[in-house]
Amino acid sequence: MSFVWESSVLAIIAFGILYFLLNKYAFGPLFSVMEKRRELVLQQMDEASKTREQAVSYVEEQKQALQQARQEAHNIIQQSQATSSNQVDRILEQAKAEANRLKDEAVRDIESEKNKAVEALRSELGTASVRIASKLLEKEVKADGEQEQLVDQYLKEVGGRS
Amino acid sequence: MRNMHKSPVIMLGGLHIDLSIVLMLLVTCTICLVLGLLATRNLSVENPGKLQNFLEWAVEFVQGLISSTMDLKKGRPFLSLGLALIMFLFVGNLLGLPLGVVTDYHDAEHAKIFGKQIEPVVKELDRLHAAADPASHEEIEVGVAWWKSPTADPAVAMGLAVMIFLLSHILGITRNTKNYFKHYFEPYPFFFPINLIEQVSKLLTHGMRLFGNIFAGEVLISVILKLAALGVGGWIASVLGLIVWQGFSLFIGTIQAFIFVMLTMVYFSQMLETHDEH
Picture 1 (spheres, each protein chain N blue to C red):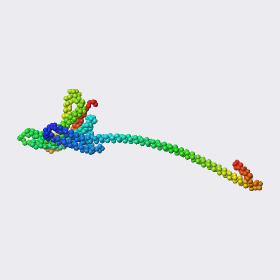
Picture 2 (spheres, each protein chain N blue to C red):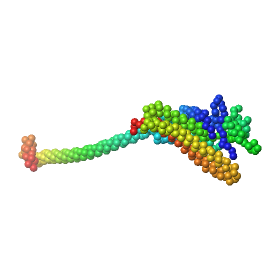
Picture 3 (cartoon, chains in turn blue, green):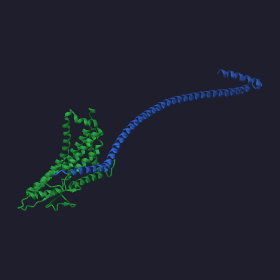
Picture 4 (cartoon, rainbow over the protein chains, first blue to last red):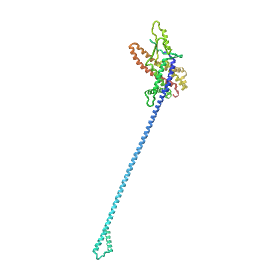
């Protein structure tokens, strides 16, 4: 086995060329792709964490909105309860007033009807008694207005007392 | 008894060119290049193909190697080098395993390629002819191995080691000048010769470890192959031995590629080491 120093030089040259070609056409692009992938992964992780933060804040917002809505619903129910009870009171009040009014009216009607009837009865009785009296006293008492007025006055006094 | 296979060295413009080394370096570089280009042909960020995944795994492996010896920020420029080196060594170490191409030459006249004499063969033939007993007509032949691991050649392994040695010292001188020159005289000035020897021994062991492991593997493979000539028993032993030893050589080749790159990174980190941080 002989040592040929030219072979050493050849080996160095061959490896140099191989290194140059591989570095330029194979490793360079490969390294850049690997670097790109590393960046992509970092970016995606970053994005994922951002998205998670957003989701958390959304959930928080949703919770608050829900809480608010619940509060509002509660308020509305309470309000409507208050309103309805108010209304009931008012309607009841109105109904009572109406009833009272109707009763008063009826009482007044009855009163006026009674008065009318009394009036009618009185005038009827007056004329009837005048007639009776005139029939009885046809000859003694002239059928003039003075007598009739007198009778009326007496009858009124009688009716007023009754 | 046949001799060790010779290398097909020819003279070309005053230089010794080992044609088998040229061939194997070309094959190794081509395989690495094709592998690298195939793996990065359809690069995709989101769904990488199988080869891309494999190469990315290799990248991460080398990254792990670098980060175990130095700060990854400092070591990033060496990632390409480490990756190319480990691919080259892995392919180179395993190339010698599956097959061997050997041509035999009987006389100096025919020991030629591209019209050039194959020097070691001619020399060996001359030596054998001179030593041979003229009375016996034993046939003289010399084998030339064309296909082998490029790293099973000491010159190639040492060449790579020298390359790393030079690179690491250039790095030390340019990036870490003060510490580089200071460390030769540490802990005391009279340690200078020892430090020098340390540097040289690093270079030698770096290259020779690789060469020795791969070369020994190939030698043992050729020895096991020769067992087959001993008859049926030898043939069976040869097949079984080959299966075991090829598997082990696969392992050794991988480990040696790993060790070579690992040591490269260690040497780089030693050269870049600043003592300020301690």
